[in-house]
Image (cartoon, rainbow, N blue to C red; front, side, top):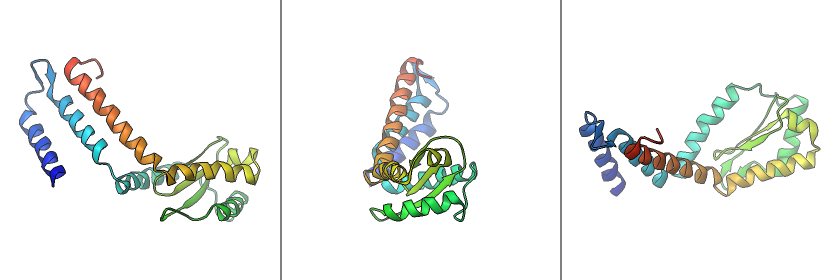
Length: 169
């Protein structure tokens, strides 16, 4: 209830101050933006992080060539994934290989785990298992949520500075 009242107060302030973009040296739009981002930093939940990850993972998949499950990469990843498991603290894991010479692997809060064929070409199965285990550890420990909260807090601070000085804009 308190969060709803705070959000309502911020939204009302935004509506009232829209015409007053710069009052006494304070950019009210940037001040409101700062408040909204600070609110997001304080209230972002695991469910929010997973929803953002769902969208991000879908965008990444659509922008990359994904190896089929029947390809040599898909079969190899399935073998490695079997050792790692298909669940992180109740979140189902979804493994895929991106066909690119880049050397990378990552995981998102929603269990989206991606490894690049370039990394698979240079490592054996045990090494890949170690890399993916590391990525799964980030998910298990909630690092995505923590990074998202930190990002919102940084943007809030930047907007607050910009609202009063015009420097960070």
